Length: 186
Image 1 (cartoon, rainbow, N blue to C red):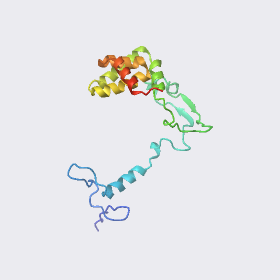
Image 2: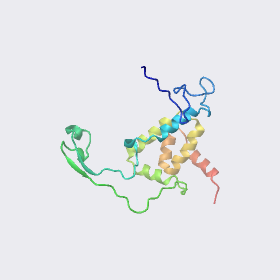
Image 3: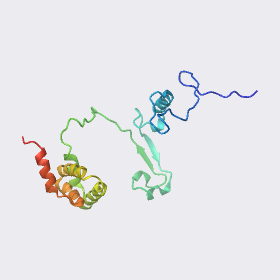
């Protein structure tokens, strides 16, 4: 007796004729909202739980012992747990105590202190590489966008803004003068 071919159905039991194509507006247009098969398929995909891909699974963590089985790992890292074959490292569970609170970035009005501090902490050669990368990225953008970005760089650190402005061939004093006109006096 030949085996009966199984028919794919929706969650409601309705047979699915085509599972590989979406309903669109025209041959290259956007997907229409009425494509309930696509939405159902995406809902299943979004809710699919793969345990090894759960990033912040509650109650999980590294504990026990880690044994390095590859003698070549020491060539690729300086981490002590990979220093040699058979190296046995005890992993302790990480405990979190106290109140855990989410940082609300909307509470602060200062967007420039942290990037400015980071820029000042960098060695001079790293600062210059950062400036060169930004200049390379902004070279092809419109002049108005460059000027707006320079205002942000200058607020973070004047040397930062001046370095990017010099790389772009823009006079930073004009940018800072423009900024002073736009900011109302207190």
